[in-house]
Image (cartoon, rainbow, N blue to C red; front, side):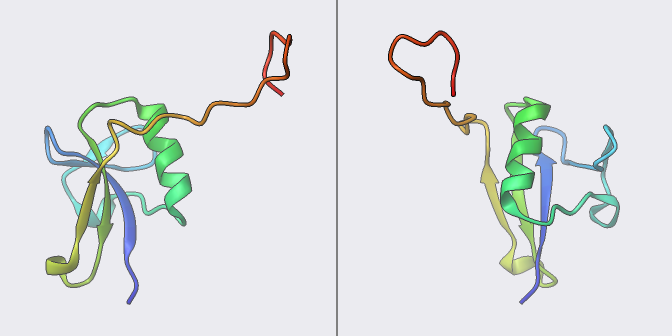
Length: 85
């Protein structure tokens, strides 16, 4: 079953439109091709109330996952190095 990966600010109920704005319409929300792309975008948006929504044709199957606790991965460092690899 197909689903769309959307970003939603649950504090105001709006979906990210992929152009820097927000929309109340699910149909106008930007759908990410994969979850990793959606999580990267959420990190850039830096909102505590952002959720990744897996939106199915049957809304009873929708899943909303909070991304506020997600952090960018730490890059490994060589011993004695000042910058990541």
